[in-house]
Amino acid sequence: MNTKERSKTTRETSSGNGRTPDIVASQPLLLPAERLETVAAWGGATKSLSYVYRPSTVAQMQEIFALARRSGRSIGLRGAGQSYGDAALNSENIILDSTRLNRILDWNPETGIIEAEAGATIGQLWQYILEDGWWPPIVSGTMKPTLGGAAGMNIHGKNAWKMGTIGDHILEFDLLLASGEIVTCSRQEQSDLFHAAIGGFGMLGCITRMTMQMKRIYSGLLTVDAIVSRSMDQMLAQFDEHLPTSDYLVGWVDGFGRGKGLGRGQIHKATYLPPGADPYPSQTLRLDFQNLPENVFGVLPRSIMWLLMRPFMNNLGARFVNLGKYYASVVGDGKRIQQSHAAFHFLLDYIPNWKWSYGRGGLIQYQSFIPTANAGAAYKEILARCLQRGLPNYLGVLKKHKPDDFLISYGLDGYSLAMDFRVTPRRLPELLKLTRELDEIVLQANGRFYLAKDSVLRPAVFTAFLGEEPLNRFKQLKQQYDPDNILQTNLWRRLVV
Image: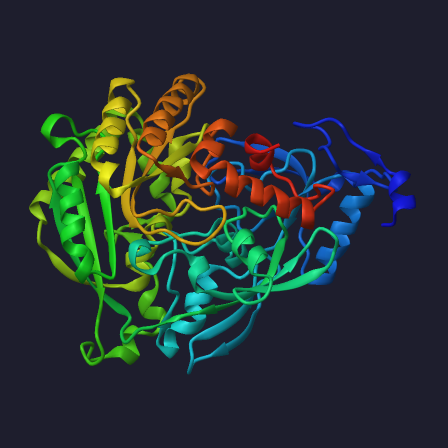
């Protein structure tokens, strides 16, 4: 658009639920009402009404960007909708759903390098490469996220201290800018944009294609050890002990433990089988070997388990479940099993729609990242504060991490604790007060936060943990590549605008 044309444009000045600021509308038009859909955050605690478009080609994506400019609407990017909060919501504006761009474009079983469209999922990825003896270096607790969404949030797995984030294994990607131009980004080409778009929660452009390096494996099995932890201090000490000899390490934390048992739980340590250790690798690497069971305990259909869980999604019921799980971990301390990769990694997929068990209000997850030296004291204070406020978390997960070189980063040499909280109209005000108290504990411990899980951060907290210099650099790139602020989400407006 030239200067003369730009002078004729109008700029919207409202924000929030209406049209968003800084959108150029040279030919204002109404969007079709049949495109309006209710779009929900994965956790179910936040929803919005948006104009949803599902392109199946990059050319169609470019047309949607042109439509946004003509209509004075912003675009929010959405993959599989697995973000817990408002990262993929864009109230009364456009949502670009990338799930139809899901083709595997190229695969080299000799080098382990794969090229795929951004709408392909983690599930598609591992299923495509497994029988050739490869596995994605980073996977989340569910196989449902798209690769583009995973890159935009720079997800991590149970091996984050060792293998980093998914961004560490991306070789290059194509980025569709707000102008409609496509640029290829790598560590050598468009390096600034590469390191800002990964983890940049979709605010600099839409990843359409990416190339990644996979990891060689020699069996479809992992050796998994169960280790009981009787306190948070002991769990952190056990992590430190087992990190050098583990490929994956994850801790379950009982949010109801008190006194000496504060932060108690169980660690699962997993290691790859070395070459030759599996006598039947051609069998264990088969896809049908990796399938999750249809029934729980061989009897109950997984599809109805969320309904059976619902009566326990209250403080009394969750306390009972956590207590039972803890004492089961005491009995099973030191147990070693061999488990398929899919069974170990994708626990969130064992029970379809398990989030429904929380009820209509859904859940929010509060995940904080704290340096190793401060983690023990901070997490004990966080767990104790939740109990004091009568809002214990129903599911807690501890992981170890390392720093990364991406601009919007949650990475540090330390630990993360993810906690799930049930949301109801009665609990919500107190829950928001609690998260503000927890924010202060995290900031005082020099901690950080993860936007893929966030629902509650305030702008001041976002700036405080990220730092003004990285945030200003990100804003500069935003101004350079999206000067009209076409790309927006509710998360962006909540934290930055």
